[in-house]
Amino acid sequence: MSNLTRRNALALLGGVATFGLAACGGSQQPAANEGEKTYKIGVLQLVEHEALDAANEGFVEALDESGIAYEIDQQNAQGDQSACQTIAAKLVGDGDDLILAIATPAVEACAGATSDIPIVGTAVTDFAASDLVASNDAPGGNITGSSDLTPVADQIKMLHTILPDAKEVGVLWCTAESNSDLQAQMAIDACKEYGINATNYTVSSSSEIQSVVESMAGKVDVIYTPTDNTIAAGMSTVTMVADDNKIPVIAGEEGEFNAGALCTYTISYKELGKLAGQMAVRILVDGEDPASMPIEYYPSDKLTLLYDEKKAEALGIDPSVWETLGA
Image (cartoon, rainbow, N blue to C red; front, side, top):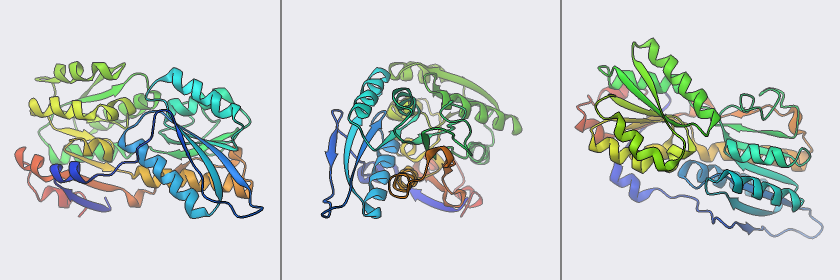
C-alpha cells in the first residue's frame, strides 16, 4: 500500500468538502473565444453521495484544465432509476455532444437512450460484466469510461491483518446494483483464503439498511461494504447501528470511510472523474472513437490507506499494525 493517512473521525466530518449538485440540474459555461466551438455536455449522476460528487467534480476539473469551451447540464436522478431514464432521454433530446454518466444505473439508462452520442461512464466497477461494452479492452460501441474497481482482495487482507480473530464477515450491498454482486463475490472468495466465513446481507433499497444492519448484531464480527451507491448514500445509518453494536466496518471507498467506517484502502473518486474528463476531451477535441478506447483504471500505485485512530484504539487494535499495511 503506497499512501498512509491517519484521520480523526470528528475532524473528518468537519473538514470534508463535497461537490453539491441540484436535483433539478444546472449548467455552467466557461467563456468561449470568438470562433471557438462550444461543446454541449450532459451529465447524469445517479445519486448524491461523496464519492459520486467527487467524480463529478474531477470530470469538470479535467474539462477546465483542457481549456475547451463548454456548456454543461448537470442532472441528478436522486437514486431513482425511472428518473435516470427520463433524464437520459432529455440529454439525448437536447442534442448534447457527449454525455457523462456517473454510476452503473446512470450509464445503463444513457445506453438505452442513444447508440450515437458518445457516453463516458465513471464509477462503474466492470463495464463488460454489466453488458455496457463488448469488452473492457475494446468497448466496440459508443460507451467508454473509467472503472472504480477497488482492491477488494487487499481490503480483505487488511481486515484480516487488523482483526485477526474475526471469523464472521457480513458483506453488505444492494441487490439493485449488478457491480455490487461482483464485488461481494470477490470479497467472499478473498475471505476464504484466510479461513473467514463471509455471508451476504443485502438490501433492495435504502429503507432496509437499518433493519438489515441490526440483524447482523451477534452474528458477524465485522461488516464489509463494497463500493455500492445505495449503501454509500446510507452509510451514516450503517455506521450508527454498527457502532451501537460494537461492530467494526471496513469500507470499500473514502466516502464510506468518511461516514464513520473504521478504515479503507481506496481509490480517489475525484481522480477517477478526471480520468473520465480527459477521455471526454480526447473524444470531443481529438476525434477519438469510444469504440476503440479501453476502459481506464485508477493507478494501483496511488491507492490510499485511511483509518480512524480513535475507533481503532477503542477496538484494541495495535497502532503499529497500520505501519505493516503500508507506512
